[in-house]
Length: 262
View 1 (cartoon, rainbow, N blue to C red):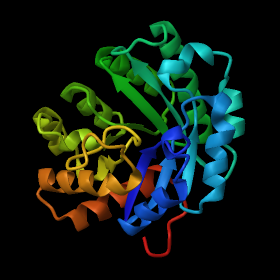
View 2 (cartoon, helix red, strand yellow; view 1 turned 30 degrees about the vertical axis):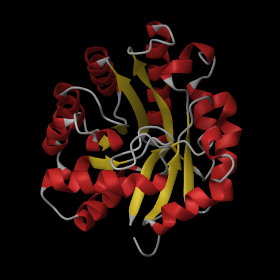
View 3 (cartoon, rainbow, N blue to C red; view 1 turned 135 degrees about the horizontal axis):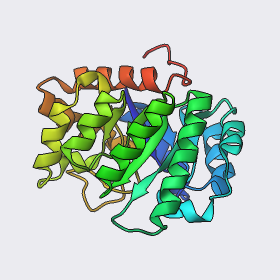
View 4 (cartoon, rainbow, N blue to C red; view 1 turned 90 degrees about the vertical axis):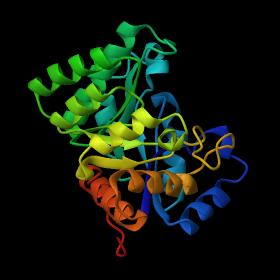
């Protein structure tokens, strides 16, 4: 089986055919999906989808693009919402200096709040980091010293030092369709350096469709293409990489029950 550890099934791109999208995922061997929250104020929509489908779970949190809009969301509120059986992660949160849609101070403040919620709940933190490697390393290192938390660097497209420090801090590293792009040699080299027991796969759909679907709307079924490339990078079969990344997923996202066939 495969697990899409990060998708956005609540986005309008899927509204007209969500049942079909999930059916195609199952047919492609993707048996579980985590639909990721980007705004706590829109969390009820994310949760409703997770409640509707047995194979879908979700997170609760605020994307760095929206950090300034939800600075009033506290760790207490995140902890309360995360008590729902279908909520299996905190985030996504983090730093995005590429678009800078939210003031950097707000992004950092939001990240620290989410880290505290992850500590309290012992749920994995889903981290978004783009063009912010040094600040991300600094915040994660400082916060880890205050108290351990589990986390994943999602849709990894940063430099090798963030991957190395993340692994040292106990984090997991998740790769998306970016791994399959022709010009992603550096990302493939970083993926090769990550220990196999810290790897995850995802789509970040509806964005970043992998080769050979690049340019199309992405969907969870396409997790299989990224898994194939990750397997090539590590010199193992796609079946072995699927087994490894699924095992890693259940270790990190420990609130998700293992299907009997897993």
